[in-house]
Length: 290
Image (tube, one colour):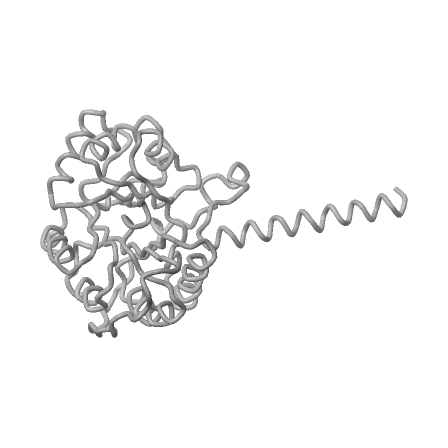
């Protein structure tokens, strides 16, 4: 091989390495890999597999009222996995911002927290537990919809969950396996369409078809763009919060998903004044659908 050939080969290798690096960087930010076929079901961060750690909630601290104009970049933050702990909800409520709260069904405080959240000006959606990979070792919790269920069983459970407390939409909890199944997502989304609700694909699998199926059914739908806490450490959450604000500024709007954990809530509270100082407005998910 001559010098020219060697130079071309080296250039191709360098470009390939750069593309792979940029793709991995995109995945760490919570976006879908462009190499989905090469890294099936691994590209998107999967908080459904995070370990459960002991948590101590922070004391509620009120934030100053926002002073930004009602224009500019918009950021919708969904806080997942609520319904089990009042202290975490009180921390969120004390921030006095229009969060979207995703509440799990069949938890002791689900209905009560849903009612209080709506009265506090937050948006309430059902956080629907769906079968993930590694099920049942990875447990989506009470009231989960599974691959073994018939369409009749799924419909009945959906009707039950949607009657548990008033909601404006539905998001996916876990579900990396089920959201890849077009037929079952059609069963799941039929009651959502019937009730004129919106749908949020949490995108726990980069092979998810849930968002596309919802679109085809005429359901107002969005996808998660940033996971705020794909790993349980402060540096990661801070980095993801920064990424959420930057994405909103770059695109005009962004949707971030975090979990009802003391660390996530504390760092989100610290970031809110910084976002608002940059003109970024926190909004409900439904505002981004209009």
